[in-house]
Every structure is written in structure tokens, then in C-alpha cells.
Length: 611
Image (tube, rainbow, N blue to C red; front, side):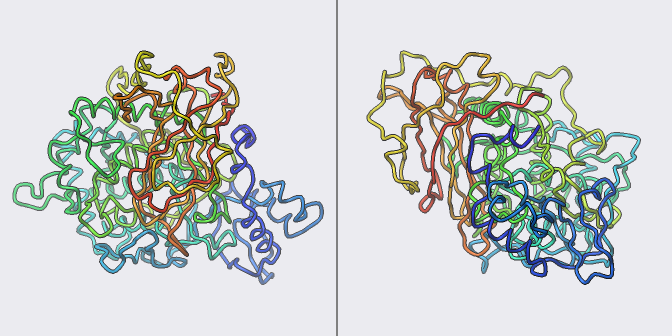
């Protein structure tokens, strides 16, 4: 799949912002600024893309794609034509040596003075060089198990492994504290893009296509470390199976503070007490509890999973998140978009579990502290499973990114042997090679697969909506401190089944700028043409989805840019509006939107890649 097949119609995805373009040219033509000496080697299968200079030279430029070198060499590639050739400037995000190039985190932590966890998230240094990742040679596949169905043996073993991790000294790379700090460092400003030539720009693994592979690697090593601590080579993590009704409550093994008079290693004091006992998780949580029966909450949750994996995850970037390459500033670059699962069920669970009474919604409610709650890892284990299930649907468009900038993005972790290892996105795509998988019910039909919202009864709809301004009649950016309703022209109407199979109709909300120190959420409704007295809910077909963010990177200021995409092909059919020339888009602020602004709203056709 080529880049052009993914990003043909969204201008914010097909060119880098001018500020970044200029900065990239300046940096790469003055190589003495920003690059540092590195003796780390890269895996052999990546060496063909790296620049190797003689040792006698004063300057070593690590992890530079050859196409970027052309910028410095001049020739045919000049500043003029580079602005129209974004690929010539791109390079994969590369994490530095995490033990030597690390700073205190804290971006996205509004109340640093009263933070309940440390902002010093740098890992300990054992003086070891970074090794190449080698796929495991385990004879057996580690099988992750649903947390709500765990046997006594599985639960006891899991508790023992977490306790063994808690018992390690805090300065040990495998300690519970240092494993929690990994998320803080990568998500709250611990590392910069120094190895890519941008020492003043933080690395942020959320809100982009790095989200899924980073967390997969994080859990991969976490699982193997736990197994080694209890000397069990087959040890596997549980996963919080919130995509089926029986698994939606927080698993019981995480609830009690003590077990047989001893501390429960899976307990965390910083959780929302109202959501722990006999409560079903809200996969569309906006900071307020919905006053609906449990049965309806279950149905709404199933619809949310369906939206995340099918309706809003219909193409690669809509599912994974937007392109994020070296030189991109998470704050200034509003071209990035958040993936469907990340903005949906993932963020909702984080916020639902976190304690609203804490200054920064610790633990799960803020990225810097989330890793201190053992529930974080079983939640992300299921998020990782969503990637697997999304691919196994084998629907058109459900394919991993193939761009070099995604494949060669890399991170550094301590492995189970206390060695520093560099891993690449390209090596994360196959669970078979990583020697783990997920236990599924025999001949299971996932309940969310049949949870497409019911088609709207025409008798409940009005023929037209009230007078709504068109997009070109509104001066953007618009502050979302109240409900925003706008009429958006569609690129085509009444497309045939063949045409729909070739391209998804997608609502793109671009240039979202928000306070990254707040929990932010707004909901998106399309063609809400209901009669007076009939109200639309997130369980209904008019609900396109939500944009939600947990507090994280703020860097130089506390504002961050993003975009969001929502699939419309099915929604328009289900709301009986496939023949309308314009779609009425309604943005409803839920929380943290007082200063949030939207840069533009448009509807596009995104070609679907074949599986």
C-alpha cells in the first residue's frame, strides 16, 4: 500500500506544515545543529537505510534516511521542490538511548506541585549498549487470558508476579515503579527527537500511528519480565475483555485491598470508587455517569466497539492515527489525527478508572501516572487485541501501514534480561513471531460484530433540519464552548455498492486545538433530524463518535493540535440520508472544551486498500 493510497484527499495529511518544513530544511542543511554522536548499531535489516560515515569524521549522523541526506547535498532537491515533496523530508521517529538522553517529564500534568506520582521518569542506567532485537525462540506461545474468566491458578500466579515486581528495589529496571515510568517518559515529555536531529521537539507516542505498536512492545517486555520474575517461561498477561458483556465490569481480582490478610498486589488506591463495585465500564465515558440501565449500557458499549473497529476504523490511518514523523511537533502539527480506538474506548476506560478526586486524575486518568495501576496493563492488553481483531475482520482497508516512516519508527526498552533493546514497528505486526496470542471462546461470534446501530425509523424524523450555516459561511477556527452545528457538502450522493467498496466517505474534523492538561471530550452527531421530544444518544445511528484526550504532552505551552476522522458510509444509510447533498454535523462539547477550537470540517472520500 503506497502513501498515496492512504492519504489522497486530506491536505493536512499530504504535506507537512510550512513551519516544520522550514525547520527541517534548516536543521538538515546545518547538520552540526542538533545531531549527536551515537555508537549504537541498528539491526542488519535496517542498515540499507542508514547513513554510515567514516570514524575519522568528527560528526556521526545516526538513523538518517538516505532520502533526507539529499536535502543536505542539494542537487535536484532544493527548498523549492521539497515543499511539494513531503516524503523527501520525512524520517521515522527514533527514540534515543533512554538512559542517557532523558529529562524530567511532566507535560500534561497541570498540578505538578500536588502530583501524587514522581515526574522523574527516566530509567536507571546500567551502562549497557543498545542491542538489536531478536525474535523469541520460545517453543510455546504465551496465551493471554480473559481476566474475568481466570482460574485460581492463573490469578494467583499473576498476583505473585506483580508482587515480585513490587518487591524489587525502585532503582531496578524491572521494578514496578520503573515499569510505570516507561509510560510517563514516552507520553509526558521524557524524550526528544534528538537522534533525528530535533533535540528541542519531544517524542509523543499518542495521538498518531505510533499508538498501537508502542504499547504492543511495552506489554511484550512487561509480560516477559513478569514471567522471568516467577520463573515461568509460559507466563501470559490477562486482558480486560470489555468488548463482551460478561467482561465489562472491572475484574474482581483487582477490587479487594487485601487477600487473606495480605496486600493485594493488583489493588490501586487511586481509582474512582464509584466505578469499582458492580459497575459496568462506560466505553464512551465523558466524565459523567449516564443514568441508564445496565442492559442499555452493555448495548451502547457493544455499539462503541463496533464503531471503533468497523465504522470509524475503515482505513489504515483512521484506525491507527495520523502520520507522525521526525520533525513533527505534537503541539504545532495539527495534521495528526487520533485513531478510532485510541480516541474511543481506550480513552474512555482510562478516564472511567482514574480517580476524579486526585489533582491530576491519577492514576489511570493521566498518562504520567497510568502505569502505576495494574489495571492499565490488562486494559492495554485488550487494546492490543483490538488491533489483532481489526486485522482478522479482513475487511477492505484493514491493513497495517506500509510506509517506511512507520515501519522504521523505533523505541528502546529494557528486556527481561536487563538488556537495552531497540525495537521497530515493522517487527511488531506478527503475533506469531512474538510468540503470544489471545484466548478466544470456541467458535466465538463477537457480540459487537452484530452491534451496528439500528436503522433509524423514518417516522421519527423530520423532512428537514432548521436553518444551518454552511461551512464556507463560518469563520474558522471556531471555539467549541457551546454546541456547533454546520452543514457540510458531501463529495457524492447515492453512491453504488461498488463505489462504496472502493472508497469510504469520511468526516474529517481538522485543526482541533485543545488544552492538553485537561481531559477533553466532545461528541459528533450527523444528520440528527429527529422530531421534537426524540433525543439522540451515543447508542443511536446519528452518533458518529467522540473526540477524547487524556492529559498528556504540552511541551512549551499547554495546547496541542490534532484531527479526527469518522466513517459516514454506514451512518448515512442508517439515518436514511444517503441521498442528501449536505450533511448536518453537530459537535457537542462534553468536558474540557472551554478553550478548544476547531480549524475546519469537511467530508472526503478515502480510497480503501485491498486486504
